[in-house]
Each structure stands twice: as C-alpha cells, then as structure tokens.
Length: 277
Image (cartoon, rainbow, N blue to C red; front, side, top):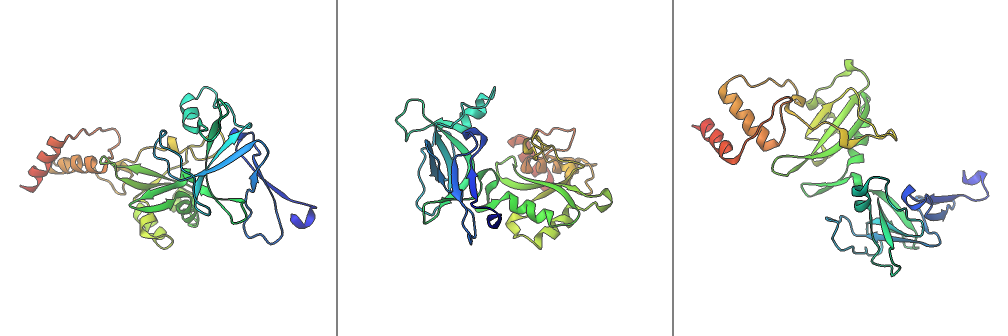
C-alpha cells in the first residue's frame, strides 16, 4: 500500500476514546508498525501490569518495559449506557491531571515505548494470564488449536477449582462430527506445538461457541466445565465410587451435569477415611 500512496498513516484508538487517539506515519522498511504518539488534547500512559484491584496505585513503566495503555484527554467517553459496573471498572480518575473531573480509560492493550518515543502494541491484557508462574497468551494457545486442520472454532479460558487454583480449558468446535477427537488425543496434538504448561487441562467439544453481537467468542457465556466433559465418563455405581466422585468434584471444583455436590471439610475428611480404611 505504501508504494501506491503518497503517504500512509496508522491511526489507533478505541471507540471509548472517540476512535482516533494516536497517529504514526508508516515508513518503508519498518519491521513493525507502531501506533505512534497521541494526538492533540490526548494523553497516553503506560502503567505496570497487572493492576490487582481498582484501588491499587498506578505506576508508570520504565522505558522499553511492557505496560497497559490508559488514555486521557478531551476524547474520553462518559461511559457505557446503562452499564455502571463496567463504566466504574474501565473509567477511573486521572490523578495526573489537575482538571476537575478528568478521567482515564483502561484500554486493555499492552504496549511499550520504542527508543524513538513511539508506542508499539504487543498484545491484550484480556488474553494474558499467569498459570503456575508462567505468563501465557491465550491467543497463542488458540492459534495452535487452529493449526489442527479439524478445528473450526476455538476459545481458551481460565477456570479455577474449589481451592482457587487456575487451569486452562479449551472449548473446541470441529469441522465435522465425523472428525470427533478425544480430549486426550487433542491434547496430545497440542503437545507437539506447545510447552506443557500451555496445554489445556480440559478440552470441551461443542457444536458452536456463543458469540457476542460483534461476532466474537462470548467467553462469559461458555458453559462451566463438568465431569461430563471427560471422555468415556461413567456415572458412579457403587458407594465407594460415589464417595470418590464427592472427593474429586470437591477437589477439582467441577460437577456432574444435573447434580450438585456440597462437600464440606468434615464430609471430605470422612470420605477420605472411609476410602482408605
């Protein structure tokens, strides 16, 4: 496109900041195209990521370090219509601005400053998670899934068990039911592409993934993992098997569809004692 134009510009900005907030003139030979610098009456801040709570102090990153983009200025929207909880999460007071009522918008984009002062996007905080000490881009796992020819659609999310431990779940739509894979077989194929810590603990096959009005995967609407998602699952038949199900549904924080398990610590201890006698 650059060869066919007198000039080419990269313009960046989310809807919440009135579309265009930064600008960069693309030059021949650039390996990566930055988003440039803020336009007039717009402020860009890169704050250290992650911010654990709404009340945490924001700290600017050092030059060249990764940070999350917050934007301020005259283009910031008032908020989301009839969505006060999301407005409160995404729009915060601008403590760097003495103007009354000044606010910042949390974009969710991760970026860093280049040596020349331009800003380069490097990813999304929405899809970057930390599992067992490893920082993981969920999009990298999804890309590896799409490399498997039978995959039509996929969404990878983080779930957690009853003890609060995080684990990865992949929701997969295949091109044909005739190509139905086993969870173990699918995970084995991913092991050829990804390190062990990026392999989903559970693969859930679905006919279709829920979508947002913008036709993106609605991760909030994905069903919670259950024991019925495990391959060749057989319901418990004996009293011992029922006790084992009680133990593992408690430990893993999953359920058998249509059944609810309420295992308190005393019952959990009793079931363990009964089993090991």
